[in-house]
Structures are given as structure tokens and as C-alpha cells.
Image (cartoon, rainbow over all chains, first blue to last red):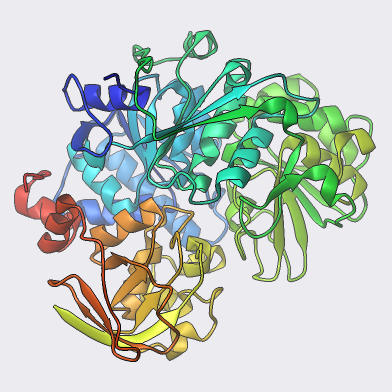
Length: 419
Length: 167
């Protein structure tokens, strides 16, 4: 009986030839990650446990991205606590204002995560790195503290639900539409505790940016991880970037899956997830006319260069509706610079959009675009829970960059063809 | 251990944003203060009216969303005896065990707001004193029982200086 790619990665990480879904193992970590919200609590627990040195200063990664540039005094104090810890521990990979980006954008970009890795992060969207053919999962601060101290984590080997995406997508359909459609189909607990494996010809044709978007939202279906088996696209991305040797693994032909779901992407229209769950997905065309106050384009889901290209394609030569505040947030300094070189930033500013330094800011209702009572946003982020982006009586509609940009221009939920 | 308390009933898919809203994150270094807003977006009366030992009884997939450990911590700080639900989001579930908040998986459809419950952790049973019904909850994996028994992951680590998962 064969193994899934996830079982193979985990078997390797616990030094065994074989593991099976359902087994509890102790896995060696390639990286342990935390941010300015979760690291302070992890550092406190690390010290409370009597730990003094992290297991490997090359492999503990801290990124200040949620409430920075410091939004208030409390945030400044938390950021300082993390900064002081990083210096004290001599961490090689600590990312601060001016050099940072959104954690899940910069870790792959800087080659810190490579195929075959086991990565934990005190951030639920750590599952993003599955796009590289790694096993990556979100944990709480206390698990992270234990990981920082030992370089290990206990976990239960997850079952895998495999999604075979075949066919040719229509115009304006991206990885975001695939994943919103899938979450709409299986629900916000449709993959609870499982690994979501994305495969098929349509996934093979997706760029790395599209794959990051898909794996990023695996958590929104309750999954432990998302994964795409590495291929030529992955290897090309890793070339000149990977800081360690990638381990290219593949699932066996006779691997056991909990479920296999076949999807014809030709049937998927650009999607919008209505409030207040990511599973409330519907074709964007059915929501035309819903008026919108704010559009956010960015985040760990859709803050990469290809996302900004999609948004700019729609906004080029057009103006943001006077009713809308449009906020564009490149996910990293590298994405920002690339967008500048390609003239995308000019397109956004000419259109009347704000362009910001990288931050998670508005996605979690932190700063840089909070909603008032009764306001509605279309956002390329990952969650539309009650009160997520501000007031408890505000609403978030999730979409991909094409629909978000079209909505910014028209002031109502719109298809890119209708601007 | 046997706990008795009143039921506060919640629906399906209660998120970490319901439990610990992002807008109160300026209180994240002051968890007792943050706990005064626990579950505010799902039931504004809960934090002010609940009594220590009361139970949170919810529908499917409790705790979905963020990995923020503040969520189970403030439920615990507010004094809830346990959270009962047919299923939990996995990061929330793991965090709860790590910080010592009992999370019990069972069918909660027959439990109503205001019911009095008696939870017997050793026996794995939940007695609904109001309705007379007795339910059993799914036992935790042995690894989690061990961590809970040690008083959470930090205490476990202090004890063994490493993970000790032999059960």
C-alpha cells in the first residue's frame, strides 16, 4: 500500500520508512515561524518552560507583519519584545519594517521553505507553503514555543482529500476562484483535520502564485494543510532561491485517499464569498449591483506580483469609483519593487487607489482600512467572519484580484468585463 | 473531576473573531481585560452574565479561523468549565489542550440554553440535569490526555525537558 506525498514528507521527518494517516508521530521541523501577534506569547511560554536558547537560530523565523509599521503604543511594545528576543537569540531570519513583508509571501520568496520541509507557524495561514510541496501547518503560540525549544512537534498524520482539477479555466478565473469554489462545495469544515491535495491538469498549469493562493485557504475548509506535489513549475521557482536542497517527493499511485473529488474548472466562474463565511461562495455575476465602500487588494492570499498584475489589468486607464476607497498592499518589498518596475503602482495611483507598505493590516481588522458599522468591503483576503475587518455590523465579500479591481472601479460587485 | 454549571448555547462555526475580536487586540497583553469581551460578537451578554463554571455548548466546527491562542486562553480566564461541541477547528482544539481548557466532542443538539449540566471527566459523561439525559463524549487521543494531565505543554516540557509521548 502506497503513501500520499504528505505521508512521505512526514515519514521522512520522523525518520521512518512509512507512516499512515491516523498515527501520532514526532516530526523534526525544518522551520518554526511566528509573527508580531503570536511571537510575544510564544516567547513568554518559551521562557516559562525554562528554555534559554532556540534549537537552531537559522531555523526560527520571526516576521513583524500584522500591526507594523507599529499602529499604536501597544503594538510598538510587542514588536520591541520580538525584536529584542531575535537579537538576544541571534536569529538569522528576523524581518522588520523596511525589509519585511507578509510572512507567507516572504518565506517562499526568500527561499526559506523548500519542497519536502515540515514547517510550523504560529499563524493559521502557514498552510500556504504546501504549494511548494512542503508539509506546513498553523499552530498556537504554546506549540510554537515548544517547537522553538526542541525543533520538533508531535502531530497526527492527516488523511488526504485529493482534488483533481481538470479542464481549461475561463477568462478571469484564477487560483482564488478555484479555492473559493472548493470551499463553497465542501464547507468550512469539509476538510477538518485533513490534508487537501490539489492535483490535475488545471493545477499543473497554475503558476506558483496561484498555487500559494489555493494552499493558503486550505485552513478555511478546516484543513491541517494544503499541498501541491512539486513539478517543473516548483523547481523553476526554487532555482536560485532555495537556501537548502529541495526534496522532491510524489505520492504513490496506490496511495490511500480519504476522498477524491473531480472538478472541471471550465464550470467555475469568478467567485465571491458572501458574509460571513468563506464557504458562502457564489458566482460574482449573481451579486452584481451590491454596493461597496472599500476594496482591499493584497494579503497572504493575494498580495503577490501576479495578483497585482491582474488588478492592474482591470484598473489600467480607469478611475476608482468616488464611492470606494481602494487599498492596494503589495505582499513584500520585492513584490512592491517589481510592481513599480512594471508600472503597476502608477496604474493604481492614477486610478485613485492607496498603495501601502506590506502589512496584514486590514485583513484582520488591525489597521490600514477598518470598516465602520454598515460598511461593506470586497477584499482579496481569506476571511469574512463577523467583525473581521472592523465593526461587528460591517461586511466582507471575498474575491480574487480581477473582481476586486472591477468592483473598485464600478462601486458595486462587478465582473471585469463590465467595467 | 466533576463540574457543574449552566449552559450558554452557541451555533455552528463560531470563529476566533467571535471569541477574540481583532479590534480588541490592543488588549492582547492584558488577557483578563480581553476576557471581558470574550464571545462578544456571538452573544454580547455572555461575558458579563456568565458564572465561573458555566459551559459553552456550541454547534459544529467551534473555533474556526485564526491560530490566536488568546481565544482559548480568554475562554479559560473568563471561567468557563469546558467547551462542548460536536466538532472543533483543529488549531483551536490543540491550543485548548495546550493551555488546559477542556474541549469535549459530543452531539450537542439536545442541549439548550440555560440547561444545567454535570460533566464527569473520568467517566467521560455529560449529564443534563434539566432534561435527565446522559451523553458521553469522545475520549481524547492519549497524547493529549498526557499533556492535559501534565498541566499543558509548558508544564510537560518542564517535566521532561523534551516531548515525551510514550503513553
